[in-house]
Amino acid sequence: EGTVLTINDNDVSNGRIGVLIDSTEPLGISSNIKRLITITFDVAANAPGGESRVRLTGSLAPKGVSDAIGNTLEARYTDGAVLISGPTATGTEVAGRVTTVDGRGIRGAKVTILDATGRARTVTTGTFGYYRFDDVASGETYTLGITSNRYAFTSRLITTDSNLAAVDFIAQE
Image (cartoon, rainbow, N blue to C red):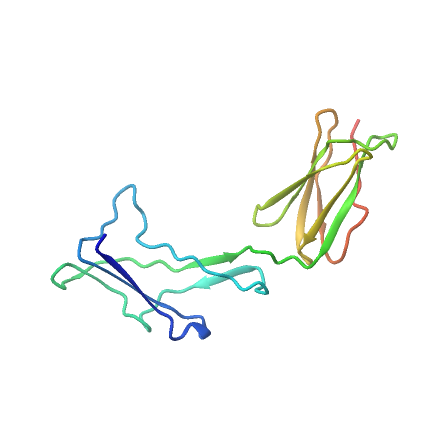
């Protein structure tokens, strides 16, 4: 209420935006409110995944905080990072089979693929123990793990340089 957010996007093609928050009422940070603004980025579909640094500067809009009559107040600005974790997949496939020691497929086992950022996807094996993950980003390292009510498995690290069609797991006795 009574707050105006102004965005200066004149230099957005160079990755720069200016943000001005103006309010008729005092804005304050209390013990349960830690931020004044949250910025959401729309990421291009072909943007590479990973970290993009965010730096606060006074070049587009001077950094500063003032009271109702314009007196400068102390403020702290913290640079940060944006992690682009959208669809960076390249159509790489990771697939395999989950079996008992004697080669029988294990139905209903949960296979989880975990990337370096902690994002996980899970699929369930079919009748003959087969599983598949589509659209896995190439050139990344993942941890694959199996969960089953009856059997135990050892997790495995894989790197996806191309399609991996035989990442099989055999139950431990």
